Length: 250
Length: 226
Ligand code: SF4
Ligand code: FES
Image 1 (tube, rainbow over the protein chains, first blue to last red):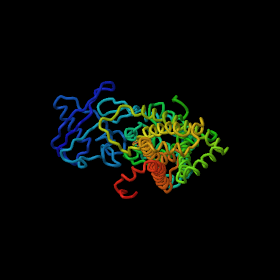
Image 2 (spheres, chains in turn brown, orange):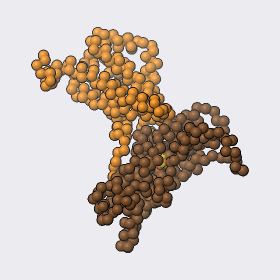
Image 3 (cartoon, rainbow over the protein chains, first blue to last red):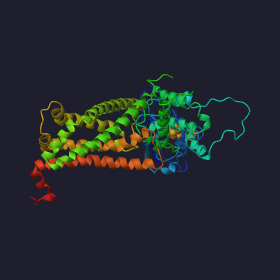
Image 4 (tube, each protein chain N blue to C red):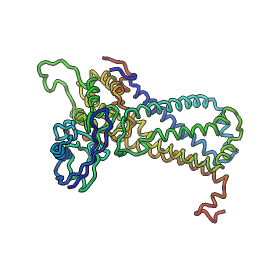
């Protein structure tokens, strides 16, 4: 396959970036998008040029490290797929592909396609945890969890924190991420005791970190590689109302 | 971590959703009132007068002013916040969702402009200054003007786009999400987004063609009808 890549090159956070065009001749349809970039980077290094900076870790779609925009879409055009799991067979021969970093106020560009997503971690530090005393392992059935609750909680727990929802959102909002984390914890008994504090602190953190708010366009749901439903966002609001209009028992 | 305020974003969302739903209710009642135009000047003016002297209307008017102000303020604040969250713009633009879902600020602004014009032509002269006594006559005069009618029709097209997103969005903001009811609500929303503007536009065109029958005869499919 022949591929013409337009890649966003930016040397640092405060320098202006621009597109650089690369022609690739023998692209195998079995390569993943990242493998294609690896090959291109080898070539660039051999030519004595600066390789393209991008992030990846597991390369099997489960860690959330990879991610950038391909033709304006977070993780590329394929539904429910991270960019490390997107293969070149989904593009056509001779295609021009535009690659850009995730863009949002809370995600400043570090270099090329690498953005700083630590703001998502900062939200998690505010309430994305449970507090419990540790000791010997409790009996498996001492905390009953219905099968339904377990599987719903798991649906939301599949969020890998990649930030594609923020990148796709016209407001750079982390609502789908936040909703997924909150929903995952609230559906399980372990998440119960800190419910109100959690939603309050996480929402305040999201605003303070420069994320926008949700305007219910659902662009996030369409781009999420784990296909998290916007039900997570409805649940986020529900948690907020609940915390707002009831006494705190914490 | 200290933020701009306790849940401020969620509070604005709730305000916009609740006032928005109230304003949709108002739109339906206003449209119902407008349909008296079909009954002619006597009935219409009488009905309008009847409404004006109804003590309950005082309460509704106050609520309406509050709803409009709260809705507009929260809309402006949310739009400004959301724009600031987006950061640098994409060079390769792909709009993942329908344009009217992303352009609520635009349809909102057009509706606000319309609201100002509408208050200036009808509400203030009739309700407050009392310059206009014969409301039917004032309506007929305004819609005799093709430009006014065109502006009115366009404003209601924008209202349709606003409603198409607003209804579903309001329920999502209230935390309503259900396997069965959410799709039903969505359909109701799209129905309202078409039906409400269509009703207003129908009456606007009715008044326009009533005042300008020669335009009606100029319509190709009606040529020959006298
Ligand atoms: S909700 Fe989806 S898009 Fe957003 S961070 Fe989680 S996995 Fe990524
Ligand atoms: S590298 Fe881990 S999800 Fe893509």
